[in-house]
Amino acid sequence: MIPLDLIQRTAEVLMEKAAIEIPQDYLDGLKATAAVEDGDLSSFVLQAMLENYEAAKEDRRAMCGDTGCPRWYVKMGNEARLEGGPVGLEAALRRATANATNNIPLRPNRVHPLWRTDHDNNVGINAPEIEYAFEPDSDWIELTTVHKGGLFGTDYRMLFPSDGIEGIKRFYLDSLVAFGKRGLACQPAIIGIGLGGSKDTCMVLGKRAACLRTVGDRNPDPKIAALEEELKELGNSIGMGAMGFVGKSMVVDCHIEVGYCHTGGMQMSVHAFCLSSRRAVARLYANGRVEYRTDPEWFTQYQRRETVEWNAHSHQEESA
Amino acid sequence: MERPQPPRRIRLSTNPAPEALAELKLGDVVYLDGVIYTGREGVYKMALEDGADLPLDLPAESAANFHCSPAAMQREDGTFNLGAVTATASFRFTKWIGKWFAKSGAKLILGKGGMSSADYRAHFVPNGAIYLTTVGYGTGALLGRGVKKVRALHWRKELGLAQAMWVIEVENFGPFIVESDLEGNSLFERENAKTAANIAKAYEGTRPAVLKRFGETDDRSDELI
Image (cartoon, rainbow over all chains, first blue to last red; front, side, top):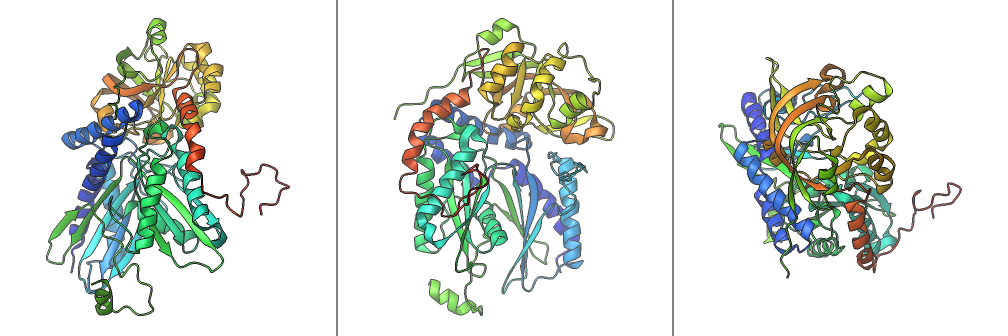
């Protein structure tokens, strides 16, 4: 049984780590981007960001003043047992979100969409989002918090099979150019693309592609992996860098996730995870052990399965 | 590859003399000393639409309006815990900015992403004001280091922590980039003009979507197929 107070304490640590510590994969990716940037202003911006990450860690203060909208991804092993059950878990995550907002502090971003009521704790109706997934043959629970900025850089479009790869590229560029000017998307970003599913799953997949995969990770389908590389290069060839200044640093990496969709459609969503790509992960065991990391390892073979039945053994053989 | 050239670095008062502003060039990097206050849609609505009296003496106390909500909290004893500060996108505040200049006498608008040169010419130039953009975005921790003290928090109850008016003493507070000058020129628009030439090349080999959207045609009697 995984104790409830362990869940809440761990969640509070994750909130702090996400807000303050830039994940190593993004940092390495941004350094590689900065090394080849030759635009004067764009280059200055990237150097300032690299200094900013250091300042945040030294001072233990949030790296960005807009600390985004905290959300939770929960992955439960099929054999995991939680004290208080799922309702207890959700209460613990809401408490952790409110406490951390006050203690770090974070910006209390969450308000009612119409009445603009602010509880000053990032908790309210349907906030924070808590999403779930399950994993076979495991008895741990994994908590991932993502604090993604919320205003610019994301779009959705219903494309059709006849739009093809050329149509995908067009909408991808439209999104980058539209939100890249003046740097509204806070690029260079991890761009996540959702293809297929339904409109809602397309958005969910694209957001997870941006937020739950690390820089350098590739889709296991070799042709999708090649498209990820191609789109990354394409984004960096626009001629636009950080803050929309002349440069070539727009995309730190590009990730694509797919879902089976209606035979007549090809839904597409684009998401930008910004210069403050805030994510932190912990795996909790029943014996109280907690392992922290920054790679959510969300998209396992099980999450991407396409067969009716799940047979772990045959999947392992396929990938071997 | 040629090494990128670092921009010019300048210290500026939050109540700057006209001569100090006249010396600034687009793309200069600025660090501020003095007092700034946050003000965005909540403050603009209170002051300009609901007619509330300003809770401080402007521009005597500060001529620097920051489009910002800090990551900050007020403790139970009334003191403040202010961590990081970054700007919010300014283009959304165009409809208030002219009236705000008249009421506040601001000389510096600090924010994210600037406004249009048309806005600068209509509202900033007649008031001898310029726009400084935050960098990144956003260098929240570096800006947080430039905060010396929260002097006051106004309209906390009416607007909540994020929209309230924070009055903050700052020293070597930056970096900011000079986005507009006293003639109303915009750095972002200058850069947009430079990048425009290459954009068509990036689009080569792409194709417009078979199903259009409004916006791609502005005639609402058009079909989108």
